[in-house]
Length: 154
Length: 93
Image 1 (tube, rainbow over the protein chains, first blue to last red):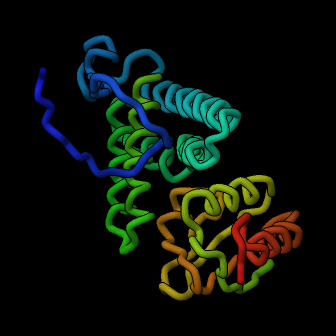
Image 2: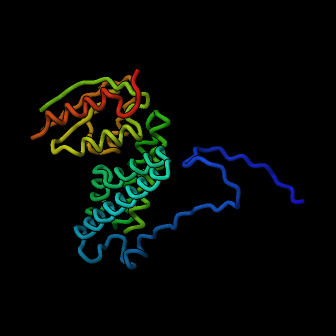
Image 3: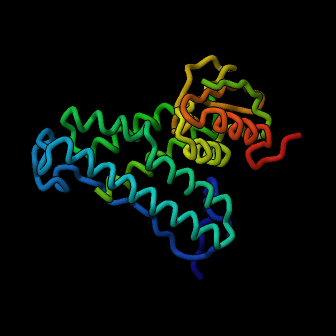
């Protein structure tokens, strides 16, 4: 008989339920800016220059918002209203003017769109995390998620 | 410009879901709409940005000032203040 060590993990459930099985830990693939941009210098904008990069950011943000809306609808259909609410809030974040303004400014200053959107998400997340309110501070992780999603689309 | 001051009475304030509903409603208007957390004394923020609304830290019992400027400012302020008064989908005692 194998001896099992009991392990308790505390956290907030994203979806309720009980499950038994091996643990697979999700590690989002790191998005490498230089690689995705085809090996250009951090300051060099390929095709279309900074304006083109800003447009690609907008298109990626729209795509991320669309994906998250779809996810929200699918999860809601399965009866998980709370989880759906989180995805809906994330869909709004993906198209949020505060996030896009910060990212666009960085792009115009020469940053590539992939690191610009992740840096912008980090700036906004830090503001939320600093709020004297646990519930709001928890939203910081949602913003970082959204930034990473847009970066992956880019 | 149309302005109104309101007290937030739903249990979670303008957090996650209520914030999303509030912002979605605001996005339906053409006017520029600002939300100010009067209780915390911070500057007005864009009511159409969920990140700005969340960063305003609006909790239950806080006083907010809503202002709208544009062609549909009256409808915007009326609709949003009714939404807030109704509890934004949560119960208000």
